Length: 453
Image (tube, rainbow, N blue to C red; front, side):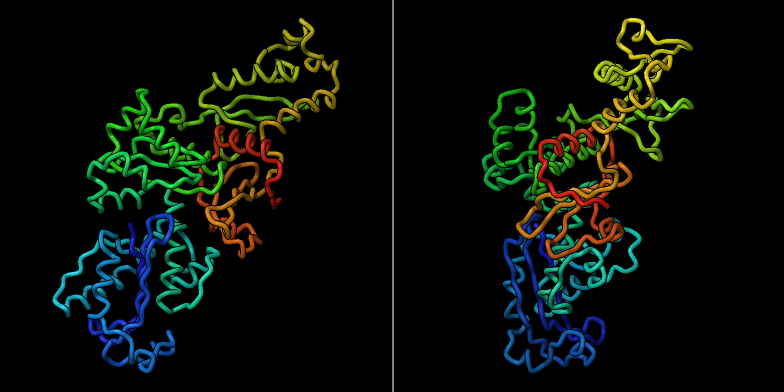
């Protein structure tokens, strides 16, 4: 659980500032579950430049509660929470100073969205809250007021959580919240799990991810794990200490996220998708006689490929199948080394491209059908799908035929150029599984909105 905080102060000498306004949003990693917003009478003068910046003046605060009157509420809403703020060191210092004046030690673990942004979204020109959220397409109102800035920080933190592919924020959070290291009853975990589409992570007592899954209804799927009698379910039931989840809003992102996360984290109880290295790829080239040739070669990220494989043998097996399916020439597909005709020509399965009996135009037409099926039809496009909330959409970026990643944007935000789009995208690996997932989904969901770049 996180307490996302923004504080406005009087300004002045270090450690002599007073709070003029405070906003706290209690955030469970998915939605705001509680909030506290209040002006505060600092019982001291406000610096003129602060009045100009925030619009808060002494007259406004005349009847506002003093800090000791709101202190109990602050303690309650931040109980068992990690303090999150944009420049957390400042907000934490101010709160500790105010509580120290009351003779109370206010100790909280903190996460700073400035530091997280620099790590997860590097090379931006500015990390000030205003410029940062504008560059990321995050709507912000009441800038330099506690509620507006805190709400913008909530949205920023939500984006950072989605870009945190190493799950370091979640791992930190689990270790900082002792209650999650207890052995909760399975029924309690199920009760706190929502019926949403997304990816879920099952952790052991050390916070290590032991299983990753996806579902259109996470609650129902987790319930199946906890009530199952197969070997994997029993292992999960024995080792689970906590469950975290990430809403994706649609099945395509859930499939992509699951595939990426399993390959990256290699959870002990996941088997099928743990393979992470695709060493070979299928490429095409046109020879001096104008026939399109196919070849399996070592994967090179600098060259566009048709699809990728975990090893040369699996690539060769795939190539043998498509040569049969599309009645292609074994010689031009690199399967039969010869200076004359291929074996399929001798048994009447090849139309004679190997000996120039079939024209390049006729032969290449079938090769292009194959390439269209196993590569992206549009080389530069954005696939738009449902987001995690009503006013949100997801964007999947494919550039030069390569899957780059995905992100979320507000409906009011226009994706009008590639650089803005890249700023909201969480980078992901392009591999054969990803290509298969996206191509299959596009075939089944033909009404998806696609923006060609």
